[in-house]
Amino acid sequence: MTDPEFRTAFHGHKDVLYRFAYRMTGSEAAAEDVVRDCFLALWRNSAAYHPDRGTLRAFLLGVARKLLLKRWRRERPHDALEDDSSLCPPADLEGRERAEQVARAVQMLPPLQREAVILAEFEDMHLDEIARATGADIAAVKSRLHRARQNLRRCLAPLLEEKGTTHGT
Amino acid sequence: MEPDDDLQLHKLLREWEAPNAPPSLEGRVLGRRTSWWRFLLTGQIRVPVPVGLAAVAALIAMGVVVARERVRGAARPPVPEPARAIFNLKDFRPVQNARVRVIRSGYASE
Image 1 (cartoon, rainbow over the protein chains, first blue to last red):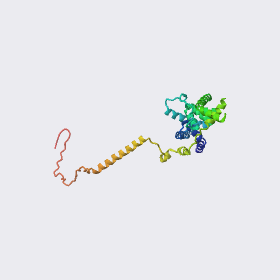
Image 2: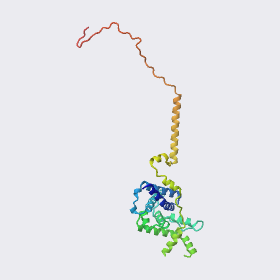
Image 3: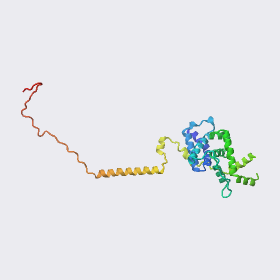
């Protein structure tokens, strides 16, 4: 990969990677470290990316995801990636902003559900691209998304009811 | 029913906005792709505090030892060089009457 190609890749994908890492970790510093490591990995081994296997965005998100899961495993060695037991209780409407409640609910999801919902809901990625980025098949991504949405509906029920009442939807 | 629920959930989730990458990231990524020799000249490494403190302590200890050795060396009296034997031919006297005695193998004769 030449220097101009690398610069184009950096400017084209840094924001989506940063937002993904930020939503996964909830930390700006951690997100910055992950995105830096992700691009340095691309620079050192650009041959690992094959255009015929998917978009560069999906490839980079896959690298970022691996770094994030590694970090997550280091911080929580005994937690399972797909465990539903740590889900948040329904949101408390008092004292917190709605965006903060949403952030908390997303970050309480198990990592595999969280990454699927972030890529689908916030980055508008299609199932096949999410599947490439996460190294899973489409059925698994669908299942994770379904469970993530169920969990989020339960966590954010008071906000959804409030919104439904307010807007009459 | 579910598509409406999904749409409502989607709208609610979108209320959480994440920031874009900060400008400092550009320097951290594009600036880091340097060759090894440039890294040797301009690179930086992070050192854990205990390791840094140990390195500083080791340097100080080495400095103290070297300084002590120098001070000891300066205070020590100079070691005299071992005396050398001086030879000359001043008292040499050649033999006055040299009598050569030839000894043959097997028996002696004058």
